[in-house]
Image 1: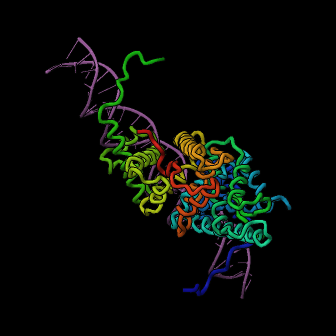
Image 2 (image 1 turned 120 degrees about the vertical axis):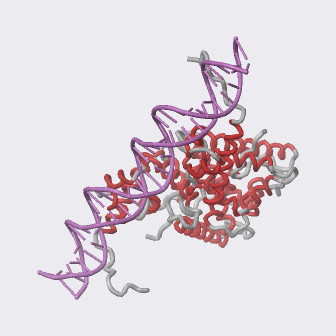
Length: 210
Length: 210
DNA sequence: CACAAAAACTAGTAGCGATTCAGGATTGAA
DNA sequence: TTCAATCCTGAATCGCTACTAGTTTTTGTG
């Protein structure tokens, strides 16, 4: 049933408020790790009461999801033009201050596989989008003759992303190997091509057409 | 100070009790998903009071860890002799009733990358063990001439495991592709060898020398 | 066997933290 | 200006983990 009356839509400053809150969550995640984040702290940092925060995001899970999405946004817009996204990934994981974000990403991706989880759709879309992006890129390389025509672009894309995600997990458990170098090795093996311009989306930063 | 007196060690039935509890947790995880598991239910199912459960496992995280380890045990011992472990993995993931275990595994592997998390050591050892296992297997294949000498066994092992873990995540978010077939493709690309006997450890089942 | 001492357990409860409720303040379209 | 929709707050509520203090069971020892 459509709403007969009412429904005026969000007020002007609401979008900004939501961004502030998401930023507050992100800050706290980076500082303390997502398990130590409590809604009270989020509220304090965002300059809002606790129910005030929950008015904008219905649950804590949605708060964490908002942080992840917010990170996607700021990360992507901050990417230096011309820098290979592959390299950007390496950078993204190397920074200690981002470790906690990757942790959150990994943990949530486990939780979110439950279709009732608020972040379910997010992760699903995320995989789709980045798989498609990279698959297209591979097809382009094939058209250019840089990659053989026998390579299944969709499958290769899937495998490259899987490798990336898995490497992250290993790296979290025990750092001390060059995650970028390993990934590149996998790409070369899968495509038979020393890639420098295969694009996709970083672990905690989805591609976005601003 | 060493214990001058005292310290009699666990009683006879304690190991069994702990197994019962771990089994109870595992059952509940399979039934409801790990997020819906509460210690009260665990206690009820194990036929014990709540503090009684917490006497054996200090926290809920340890309970979940116990479930994971318990699954490793029963899974590994139940593996039909002669069946390729690669195939076993495929089977393991395909079963719907195991989905919740994989979820738990993934989520926890995110949480556990924090060194203070109870499961930190578990996951670290797990990667090490299975990496070593598969690397040795690859070296064996190289000795047999089935795999070229230019392949870096350690790196390949790392990448295969990473791929496996990543494929699982994708599969959880959106099933509907042949996870075993994809993995095999990756293995072939990385080793240049149609492997049937490369061994490692399944996603939620570590190798154990009973 | 008895009996101390450690281990295994129970009832009760403290207390943290997410969520809800019942309003109050603010915004903006008419 | 008016007034409904939106946004936000203080004060509970409630589910859940984990602790405290004391009780029963097990088991080595004489």
